[in-house]
Image 1 (tube, one colour):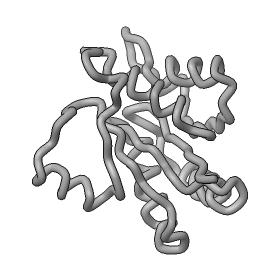
Image 2 (cartoon, rainbow, N blue to C red):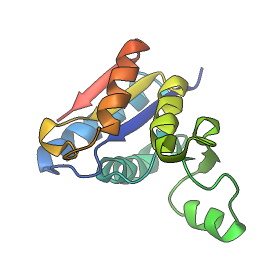
Image 3 (tube, rainbow, N blue to C red):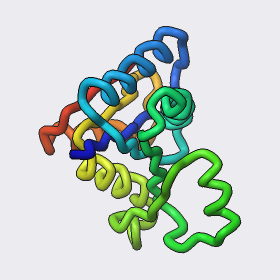
Length: 155
């Protein structure tokens, strides 16, 4: 059975060698021990960028893994944008939950990614929380906890 994992984290992170090593080991463990084949990625997050970079490197060792970009914007995309996305991802789709959600589209997309995943990998750090507004990462983490998902928090 194909298992799925998603990545959710802050727009800005404190990127260290230790974080990169832990993330590499975490993703490889998900592939080897947990049999995860599909990885869901959102956007607008430094954490997602780091996860994509590591998953892309691991794809050389594990070519069967699939990197999927879940869009919170652009329900319909043209071939040029699709070609651009395929330089980084193996597939993409528009989150049905994000449709018509306005400013909440990213939160709704994250919730959908959590619902679709067997494992949820988070980067949550109180120091990285946005000033004066709600944290989408915190909302997503709380949602994953309510859904009793397998949660891995890196910081």
